[in-house]
Image (cartoon, rainbow, N blue to C red; front, side):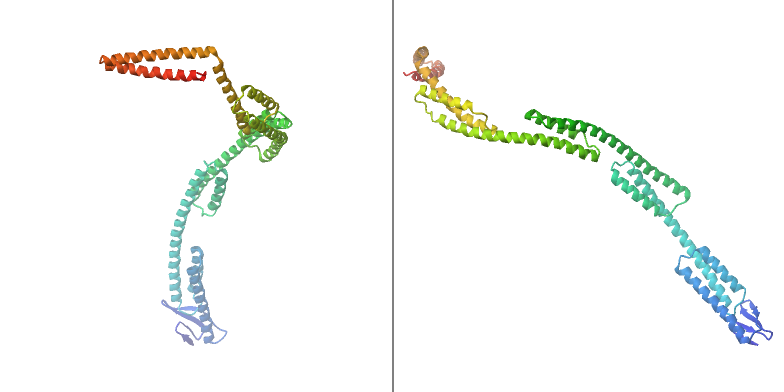
Amino acid sequence: MSSDPWGRVDETGTVYVRTAEGEVVVGSWQAGSPEEALAYFERKYEGLVVEIGLLERRVRTTDLSAKDAQTAIDHLRSQVDEHHAVGDLDALRGRLDKLVGTVESRREERKVQKAKQTDEAKHAKEALVAEAEELAQSEQWRSAGERLRALVDTWKGLPRLDRKSDDELWHRFSHARSAFSKRRKAHFASLDAQREDARKVKEKLVVEAEALSGSTDWGTTAARYRDLMADWKAAGRAQREAEDELWNRFRGAQDVFFAARSEVFAERDAEQTENLKLKEELAVEAEKILPVTDLKAARAAFRSVNERWEAIGHVPRDARPKVEGRMHAVERAIQEAEEADWRRTNPEARARAAGLTGQLQDAVDKLQKQIDAARAAGNDAKADKLGRELEGRQALLDQALKGLEEFGG
C-alpha cells in the first residue's frame, strides 16, 4: 500500500483521492507499482492545473466571450468532478468558482461598455443624420457631395444599433442623400439647358462676327463688335468644349477685322502726322502777319495761308485743337483790326457817338447845377440823391468819350 497527502493506493490497486467530503475512488492500477499509479494520477492533476491557469490568463488578458469562457469552465469542472486525478481537487473547484465570478464580472463590464458604445454610436449617427439633412439643402454641389460621401464612410465605421433605431436613422440619412442628389441632378439639368441655350445664341453671334470680319466700315463695324461682345458676355457659358470652339471662331473673326483696321489706321496716322507738320508750318507763317499794320496786306496774306491750309487733309485728333487754335487767333486779330478800322471810318457811327456824348454832357451839367442849388438851399438829402444820379451819368459820359476817341477825336 502506498499514499501521499492527497491520495493513496490500496493492496487491490484501487486509487483514492482525498477531498473535503472524504476519499473518492480515482481508478484502478494494475500495470505497475503503487507509486507509479499515484504519479500517473498526479500528472493528470498537474495537467488540470495548467489548463485552468491558461483559462484564467485568457479570461484576464483576451476578449474571450463570456459564453466561450463558461463552456471552457464547465468542461474543466466536469473533469475535476470525475475525480480522475490526485491532488487538491477542492482548490481547483475554488479556482473555477472564482473564475466564474470573474467571467460574470467581465460580462457585466462588457454589457455596460456595449451600452455606452451603443449610446455613443446612436448620438454619432444622429449627428450624421442632422448634418446630412442640412447638407441636403446646400447648393455647394461639389463640397456638399464630397462631405456626404465622407459621412457614409463614417456611418459604416460605427456599430449597429438595435434594428428599429438603426433602420429609422438610416432611412433619414438615406433620404437626405437622395434629396441632395435629386436637387443636384435638377440643377445640372437646368444648367445644361442654359448652356445649350447659350451655345445657340453664341453660334448666331459667331456667324455675324465672321460675316463682319471683311468689313471696311471701320467705325460702324467696330461699334457692332462691341455690341456683339456685350451680347456674348450676357449669353452665359456654353458647354466647355463648345464654348472654347465658338470663342476661338468669334475672337478669330474680330482679329481679322481689327488687324485690317489697324493697318489702315496706321497708314492714316502716318499721313495725318505729315499733315500736322505742314499745318504747323502754315501756323508759323500766319503768326508772322501779326501785329497788323497794313490791313489789306494782312488780309491777302492770311487768305493765301488759309487756302493752302484747307488743301491739307486731317491731322491727329488730339493735336487738332492746338494747331487750329493758333490759326483762329491770327484770324481773330485781323477781324478785330477790321472792326477798329470800320469804327474809325464810319461817319454815321461817329455822328451818333458825338451826339450821345453831347447829350450826356448836358445832363451832367444840368445835374451839377441842381446839386449846387440844393446845397445852397440847405437840402442835403436832395443833393445827395442827385449826386448818386450824377455818378451814374458821369460813368456813361466817360464811356461815350472813350468810344468817341476811337473815331479819332
